[in-house]
Length: 94
Image 1 (cartoon, rainbow, N blue to C red):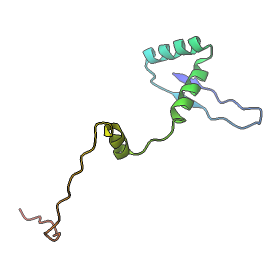
Image 2 (tube, rainbow, N blue to C red; image 1 turned 120 degrees about the vertical axis):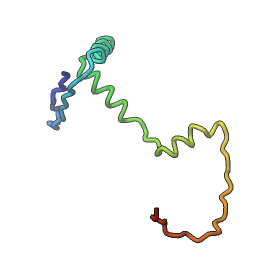
Image 3 (tube, rainbow, N blue to C red; image 1 turned 45 degrees about the horizontal axis):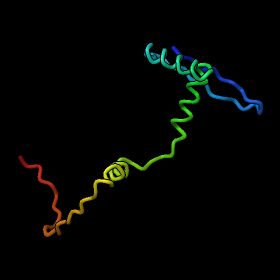
Image 4 (cartoon, rainbow, N blue to C red; image 1 turned 90 degrees about the vertical axis):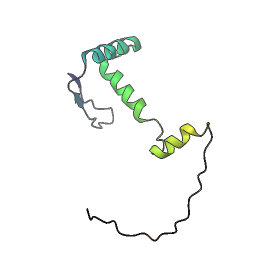
């Protein structure tokens, strides 16, 4: 289990804390090694990872991301058929 302890800044602003349960042991080991490589604690490493992940600019919804991904390939314009029949209620007869 990895627990992040709440700290208070100089301005006396309360900071949140979080506990992560059921963390995979291999993931925890990788986290510990990354923290050591960067010269800080596992808590600080998690804060940095979360800050970096959540401070990414928001991209559009799924449709926008699909369009963005395939823009380089070139789009296909589909002709919409005209609707000649009036809409009707669905039939539920079996």
